[in-house]
Image (cartoon, rainbow, N blue to C red; front, top):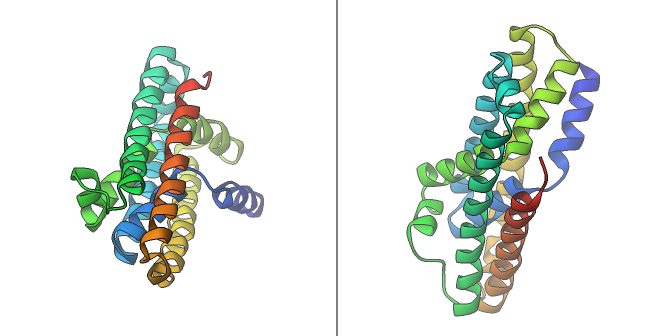
Length: 199
């Protein structure tokens, strides 16, 4: 279990698309929307955990058409969120439209975190390759996966709390536009990388 916790901590600490989305939603909304995003990410991971424990994950991971469709859908979603954030940086205004309104409400932020994680087939590949290294039973796979989900939620919630505390620093127009530009670019970059990766 200690080895699993160490590996999990290393993987979770590496910033990725879920981190970028949590920061974005915290800046657009509040600490609550950042934490809701983290919970959505954890719910997505819990879904992958359940799929792995039931053996469905391995079937999906080996189906090239299903894996490619999931990858492209996830990439399109990230690019769309990133482009909207970049557009707000160019215009110098807050992001408008359904995605930004969702990011300002915990329920919408949760949904964005969930969709972001479910649209990332690398999470499926990760869970189907990592969890069986530590357990061979469905109950064991489920337990290890849920521990990973809890660690992820705690880590991303930490990001949300820190970003919310310094949020006032980003209230200035120039700073906000710069942050929007960086966050948007990162989300688009993750989306394009996901779209062009070979399975």
